[in-house]
Length: 432
View 1 (cartoon, one colour):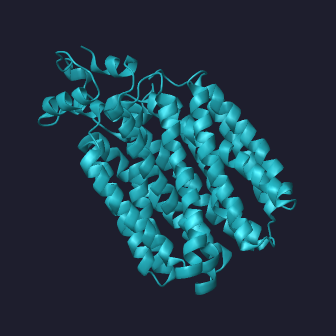
View 2: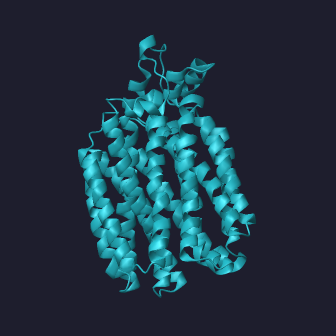
View 3: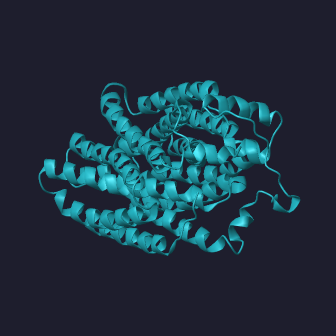
């Protein structure tokens, strides 16, 4: 019996959807944790007397940590397993959020945000891979899109909690709530999350067969099976250098470029929009509402992308999303000075298209690499993509201090999204 073929073609079981749900939970917390600074930026800036560049640096601190986590923790999932890495990364993220609560200087906040980011950076590749591996072929795109929608939902809840908590308890309460919720999530993962079937089949750690038998029983696959024979020459060392082998280098560089440009655009839009609108004269509650509308749109866009790729080719749908997102950015700029209702509608649309692009990258990314180094390939792509998300908020802060207007910044984001379109047009994903 070919276990992977059974998973690909059998209906999705409750256990498989449970894995998707756990990934959604983690991605929600990631959205909450990463964008907590964006929603509390004005309060932190007022309390500590920071410049726009310093606030941009604090926003980017978490993204720097995410880059470090993706590049260092993510590849370890191919050696230690997806489950252990998710538990380690979630614990690191919870610790970082707790330290932010106790921070009273810009240096300590920056350190704790980097630590939080390292945890999140380890979580993202593992959840992306494990959802792709547990979902069947028919619903894989939708499962990854549902998982990707969690980020927008978490960011939205972060915005809502920020409005409620800051008024009553101050900005630190937002980070305390994030720490507590992340710790609870760790306990849920420890109890419910199974190991990756692909990891157990390929790496074959101690008692792998017994563990696989239990997992297969839970997902409704019965019948005798044996590990496939692996020729010694077919067993390759897990190394990021494999990404640059002749058969991989072209798609590696193109997917990296797509990740960098999409992440740079998305994190500029999601991180700076509330603060830019407030600086332009919009009241804090309204600017935060627009920020939440972008997050709500992000959740919707991921789900819409998932339904579309269950019928059409993922790369073609993603190309349509990147072009549409570039147009939406340009339309959004003049709308922010018009009626709030129009700004909210366009914010939802912009968030839907921008986060739909990320869902598309998450869908395509795992199909590019073999199972034995899939986490390495996925985590390196996400990690390199974080360079864009890391540099973007810092660059915007410096550009604002240098006199740039918000219109120029948003039009620049549109150009960057079109670069992603070109990279994706040249990419030819493999069949999962």
